[in-house]
Image: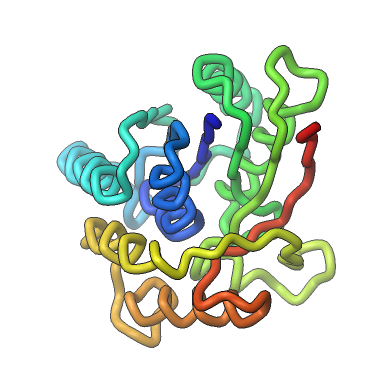
Length: 221
């Protein structure tokens, strides 16, 4: 099985799907990750920081066990300005990877880049596209999905759970590669915060730990 994780920023792939990626790798699946943006801090781009963050992404990839990594290098904070500029390279990435399963952002996230990636993914993975994605699901990102406003259309309503009990420590180790993004508890992007959320999601379905998703399309047949 071929799996593609689409992430707006370097670290979203770990926060949203890190343990599930490790599970796919352990199962022998081919995993690819597409990072859409170059990271801006305080609304500014620093080439040295970009190099460090890309190195962190590669370290996280090594910990999780996948090798195929794509950087689209689009502008952080501006993805919703012109969606076509995101759709086209995303379509090219999907045509190259030809995934059976796609994990992408949730439409209700508080981050505008996450919402833009969701909208572009929906177009790039449409059922009538040249390559048909069989399973299309959205993931949650700590400190983004969880702080969306209490409006019905923003709600993250999971219907697909993955048991990651034996892969959770690998996810936390991969997140530690992102030194700038790791925080101290009670911040959600802390080691303890990641562990608590995984345990909470596991309790919802009867697992020791889980990552949960919203499945929008399942065409396995």
